[in-house]
Length: 122
Image 1 (cartoon, rainbow, N blue to C red):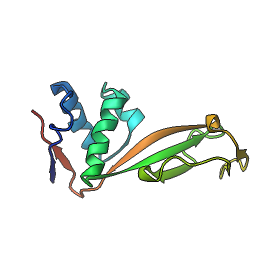
Image 2 (image 1 turned 180 degrees about the vertical axis):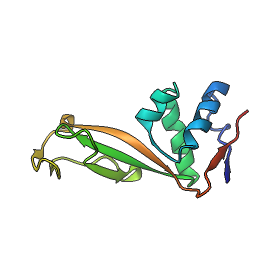
Image 3 (image 1 turned 90 degrees about the horizontal axis):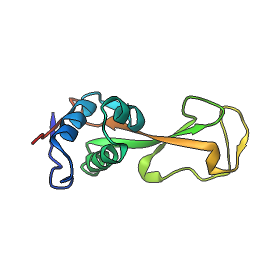
């Protein structure tokens, strides 16, 4: 199990935040929106934590792209590749997506370490 200690980079985190992110990473794979809601953790704080995890190569982050036509993601893009540009054809409804406001996004995290990540909690 990989030990992850980002405390120097995330000084504003409270003990409650650290406990919450420890519970989140134990899941192995999760979305930002779902994890922040389930664990009462601000999405901005969780994203900052995930960016630290990715910088240390302990996870991979992806943009999950949703179109108004479907409740499930129509595309998953590596986070570092950025958001998809428009126009493009939706693979579900085959309509041309011309405006970014036709899309919504979430961030998916996949823990890279096969036996998980242990977060150093103060």
